[in-house]
Amino acid sequence: MFEEETVDISCPKCGHRNSLMVREVEAQTESHIVCGNCGVGVKIETQGFRERLVQVRKELKEIERQALRESKKPKARPTKDDYSI
View 1 (spheres, helix red, strand yellow):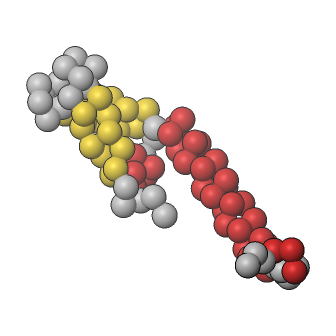
View 2 (view 1 turned 180 degrees about the vertical axis):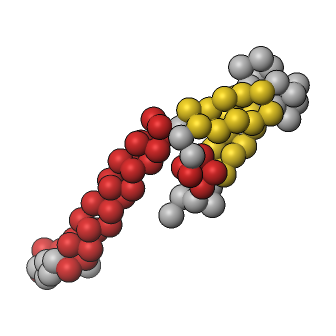
């Protein structure tokens, strides 16, 4: 679901924002990138990111289930007081 999205990682040296695909971060427990601005190597530990991504996916599924339940509820019929002339 989020695999095609990007995550911005700020360089600790120059602050440049480097983009990584979520699928790249999610696939490994640790990633290494080279800053596109200053060339410094950046180590990224992804365990916390992956745990939060799992949690977000669960929350999104719950929202989808709740929206489906709400859409199936019968709508209240209008009463004569709902209209104005």
